[in-house]
Image (tube, rainbow, N blue to C red):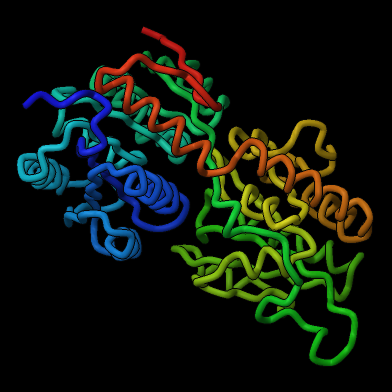
Amino acid sequence: MHRSATDPRRRVLHLAQPVEGGVARVVLDLTKAQLAAGMRVTVGCPDGELAETARELGAEVRGWRAGRSPGAGLGDEVRRLGRLLDEVRPELVHAHSAKAGLAGRLAVRGRIPTLFQPHAWSFEAVGGVTAALALRWERWAARWAHRVVCVSEAERATGVRAGIRARYAVVPNGIDTDRFTPGAQDAPGRSGPATGRRPAPLVVCVGRLCPQKGQDVLLRAWPEVLRRVPDARLALVGDGPDGAELRRTAPGSVEFTGAVADVGAWYRAADLVVLPSRWEGMALAPLEAMACGRPVLVTDVDGARESLPPAYDARCLVPPDRPDALAGAVTALLLDPGLRATLGDRGRRHVQSTHDVRRTAEAVAELYRELLGERPLMTFECRESIHS
């Protein structure tokens, strides 16, 4: 019996590698919304946090052994993915991030509707010959994506400038505004309440400990912050490959929390949330922090810049890789509680109106319906452009 394009029983396959951090969060948020809408959702990914949580949500999970970066095993990874596709028989594939986008497009080759979502372009994360090869691949493989889904207008513009001729759709990241809400500043590790003394100012940085997120720049800026605000404390929330080196160079006022189950508690504890990234697609951390009513300070890079509300204070945007500028901005905000309160309120209202995950999920659903045969409605923040 023929099924209409809008039949919710149609099966979508999400392919993901990496399986932690922001990419995993986006996949899980979409999975939750799509299951609630009655879709048949399969997640193909390596074992880890993403697979475990997707199972808990009720999705079918298929293990896909794949490394985080391309290597000698790519051929085997593509063959394994081909077998997975034969077993699942999805009617639409949604590949997340560079590695899944590489293997997924090689395996599918446009035979069924395919969305590729870079979550930041791979050629921005590397240099030299590797960057040139990554860009050459993205230009070639765009023919095998029915849509390239960018999480910010800046990410789309970067792809266009790089000569990636694709049919783009911009769907800004969203976050769960029921989960990330304002609350008391009482996260684990925050000093003050137990002793009755005023808590020391707390700066929080949430993200994978890796070059992209720029925690090393924040640590280089930190001594100057302490010179002006001697009792300030810094919490680096997350884990990653640079953890050991960052711990080696950090002073005693810096706390490394590792991976935490409730990152919202750290946002609510913060006087200021900082994201000193070198590049981004559109980071979730500033959106989550603003939803919790906290002021944020980000670097002036694509994706991070676009997450801020219009007319947000200029001091909350600093150049990347500039410890001096970062230290000055952190200090100025720590010494101005009135401004922080104003920014926190403005950011919360911005996220609620623009970056609620329900808007994101509906915009993605519109793309699915279009590719599966229904006339597009083009609602919310989904904006298409064609560069062919």
